[in-house]
Image (cartoon, rainbow, N blue to C red; front, side, top):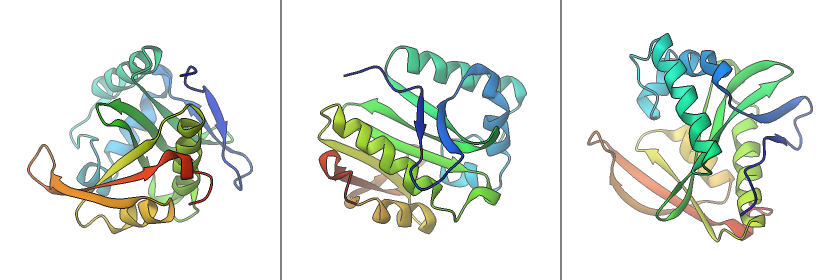
Length: 175
């Protein structure tokens, strides 16, 4: 597998790109943790403080350097709108995402998930997956728009029900 890309343009979204999250991007981690619905639907802890945000950013940089996964900042001309990325697991790669409320509804996550899935397909990955906590209709809609199919139901680490979605990475270009 090639090294993870440091930068990806988002087709159909001029001026918006995915750039590798660096330690200096800790503020977007803190901002997202303070958005009311982000901790409810993602792995962002609601009690994240500045030290924790700095640690989280540093941990993500180390993971990218080790090729375990990568988190990108969704960047619109210098404005951090959110994060997206993927992580390696036993079952392949899982994609994940979170946006600030004012950046939602523009198709940015759909474009980002499609771009990441396509890159993984170009690297020979056959399956990509994502998880949604039950009741997260917006995230489920992203999964459907990106061509993911319900794969199985399960339980989140904190006991909440979730759905795992997967798709053939080779189909990434035609969701």
